[in-house]
Image 1: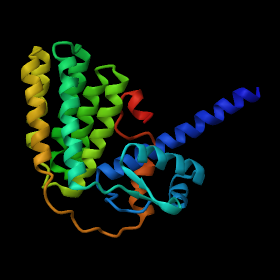
Image 2: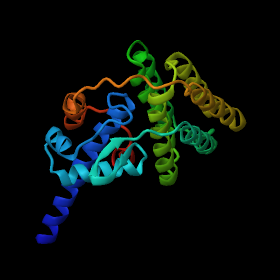
Image 3: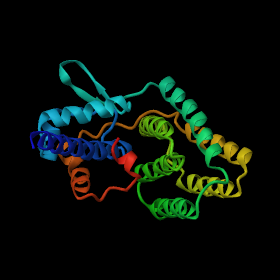
Length: 253
């Protein structure tokens, strides 16, 4: 009985960590939390109704993904990658995602094609919204592709490098061209369906390289908003399970 209770408690803590990670990850990707923003454990605990220990575990997981930096005296901040680190991340991402589409070319099921198409349709509907939401949806398209390989290693590394690239875009990029991204995503799906390996690898390379090329300008000024106010909508969505659903493996990250 005691062992069962311990297992249940561990699972509950893991779920809480996952909820905080999803909310913070989304807030960072959507640029509500900007590079350099402080993430105090006590404020996170208050916002999400958890202990500082659970908040600390969530920050540790995000630090492993490169989205958060852990400094002395347990101070955590949203990571601020250098331009060279950003360029390296995109170079690595290009090679990883070329491998993803090489594995998927000609092998997608009808259900997977429908899922990818529906996701791009959601990107299209979001075009009149903010750049930050468009960037998040565009990133989730690539992570969805990685999941369709059924390779845990590819899912892990594509997810991590994609999130780091999102952080780069929030720090350095020109305005996001959602129309270009949507058209390129549709072209990638089309080449995958046809099974044209060389073409789809080339499309993925040029698509991600063009995204990286936009990451060249200076960061926007920090807005100085209160952390609890910034995280309010993300905490509510995470608790209500209204965040964009990715496959189970992604939600556990």
